[in-house]
Length: 366
Ligand SMILES: C[S@@+](CC[C@H](N)C(=O)[O-])C[C@H]1O[C@@H](n2cnc3c(N)ncnc32)[C@H](O)[C@@H]1O
Image (cartoon, rainbow, N blue to C red):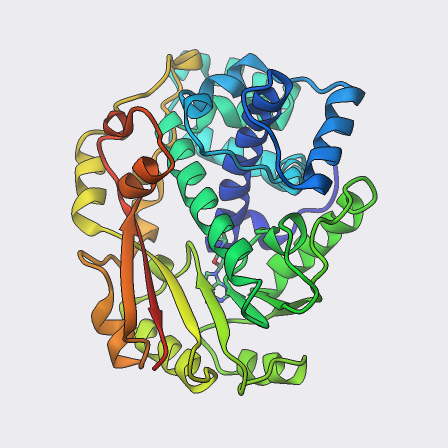
């Protein structure tokens, strides 16, 4: 087995967990295309998917089962790179850890561990991940994908803070006029580059944009210098993306982070910040997770947000207008919740998900 990096522990591992959700969604996407339930507008993506389907792909039932009702909605997301991140020893290590934490029936522990060892990672992820968590990730990915596709036509720079294993800069039709900068811890960037060097051999990039990856701790100062050093231009309006990030920061780190973003932003820059709503998270914890849990394999509980609740240390009850205003992103502030996104994309049963813990707030710099 390959040597494991630190990417499978601590907050760095959450990038793999999110990737696993996206990999599960891929199967649904491929099924929907195969069954002609959706048509793929982008020419390159359509060709890629056609090739994957022609080569034959195993769409495991347990995986498809995670993504119910998506075929009745306009929520379709496709991240072929996620499959590569999931198919790694680091990913298996995380599943093992999660499975133990989710307390399988004691007498079935060994059966379950054997199952994890023998099945493809994507299948075991599908047994661990709750449908609800997976669907919420689908809404989030679709909403942000559409924002990036639209904004990359006008912004010349996108900075993705805590980019994790997000591969929008490769898999979306971003023009070459728009530079993308991705920042995360060095170990995450190293892991990403290593796996992408394999994935790039079989996946053709859809985007044309220059991509720059920078390793660093975003609660320190060094990244600002590195960003400028690598071609970021403070005089040009920037789209800042903070998806799945500030909830992991201590509250005292949030203002300093936004001060830095403000100091690097020219007028017309835009921030998109994803936050977790504390009261919804508490309800989710109280309800014991997903109301839409699927039958449990060997007694395993489904993974829900409560599994990492103690790591989600910064929670916000309302759109973070105060933070945006304080740091001069007070123009045209808007915000949308998971539930609103579900409705926007015509997800037929938004109420089955009960708790909607995510919110996405936007503001422009005056
Ligand atoms: C849940 S993942 C989200 C990744 C990506 N934005 C997405 O939504 O797919 C959280 C990411 O935040 C990164 N992160 C958290 N704190 C950080 C810090 N202080 N500096 C750099 N990266 C950080 C982690 O390494 C991880 O990749």
